[in-house]
Image (cartoon, rainbow, N blue to C red):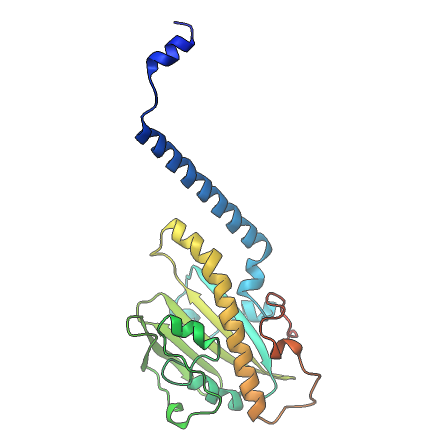
Length: 256
């Protein structure tokens, strides 16, 4: 075997610039992939459970809800909840009018409208949107999927299912000693996404959904309680209820 020498190296000639660029690109992609994997691992370990189950008790997370049967094997289940000092019958009108071009979503309208969703959250009950029926479809946006009403059980459960089969969104109303627990459950499939797409969804969309849904739950709570007669004794105001950005990951509601 010929010994290595500077002469041998020189005879090999310089590396072609295109090959160097390819090597750099591969190294960059590998580094980005490793960094994303590390971020996903950290999120799963430290924050995902709180993100997906904000405000919900262990019982609520594990309990079956109407609509679960529509997607028996989802890739993602988010169950979030809040206590409202009102009866289910007082909450229902605000739920049944939800949707774009209707009562809105009670969240950050400006964010929704950047996506072309035509959301304008109502501060009053709208009589014209109180007669929702199973089978009706609500468009999320001009180019987005239709959300079909799958369950409409007055003052108990409201379930939407996307017509593309990728999303089931259920609301349940459960009376308790403090009023009513409003539980929101999203069941989502990401099977049509690539591995990197699923990772990006976890890291970006799951936390974003918490921000929007937490605002929605507090938005419904505030509207209902401003219009309803409180149930039982009233407690000191919850500062988080007036400041939806505070304590984002902390489940601040009591266990049912």
